Image 1 (cartoon, helix red, strand yellow):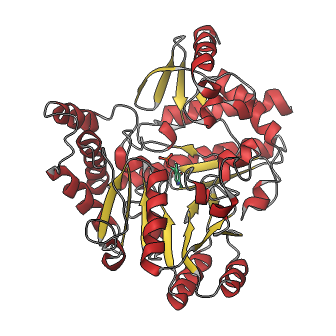
Image 2: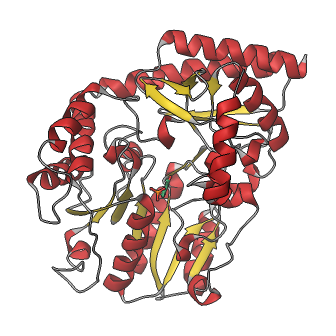
Length: 430
Ligand SMILES: *Cc1c(COP(=O)(O)O)cnc(C)c1O
């Protein structure tokens, strides 16, 4: 595969942009290869600047659940553009998106738009602290909540992959209020809450962890968290930036039947434009300015272009619940295909899958938390990633990320992907 132009463009970008990329995972640094520069995407396929075509399992890291250039979203964007790009004054579409989101999350009564998932979790924490008058927060090892200071503590994919459990530039004074527990381990949470009685403002987690590879929460674990938060007056925050509107229209909250006090969103709700949101119970959200005095604002928040694209995508998902059934069917086919090949060649690896997400973990350890994920053979992952890339399959370039299916992936795409996986594993393991 010729990637000459991509390499030239990366060299140029490296002179101008730190590491040549605007978000670290794009650099392909974890798989020991220069990144591919993208020209365009249509449906489930992307095309690079050298003219190579790939079946895309990144889907912009989740937002594009309906594939690249979804016609409804594109029409909505073009129509919105005809009216202007941004006003800094309220527009009707903001309430329409809010209404759809509140319908999907009955535990939420009010929602505020922001511009990224990072902003959503940062703001949710501030509001939870303002509401409870407490400072400490609990997060889980391996969960990622964006790059804001208080949460960049042992925090999932970026940190795992780059070996930075905490980043330089974050004062200890800030992270001293961040307590870290073990995912799926309620004992660790009970002990932590007990040791910090009356001081914990919020427990934040990905109710389906998708930033250390795909790690599913036990329902019991989530139910017990709900109970502890009720007993101790702690705000339970679900970070549904990935799982929201992906694991069904009601996200992980509805899938598990566990309600949260606040939830954070991003990715799918913007359909590929920069959006985030956080919401929760009225009593809590009433603390946010201007109803309350916890300050939070944004020049481009609720941007009409992003809102119209988000509205088009969310409306479609609401009207077509069968989408989720079809996505799950397809990912099961992919997972079963991969699994059979891994067993045929006796590879120490397993496939974890849910909804339209999946990860191939190169370990036999049962995957329940970050420690389990750390037993993975990342070099084996990289070799398989590169083989697949050379066969026109764009997987997520890290062991600690997930593959995202979108509705445009055809049966033919899935079959081609399984075929490429068969050849890759055969070349490496036979
Ligand atoms: C992507 C992600 C974020 C951060 O969102 P950005 O838009 O990248 O800031 C936060 N939480 C989770 C669970 C995510 O997957």
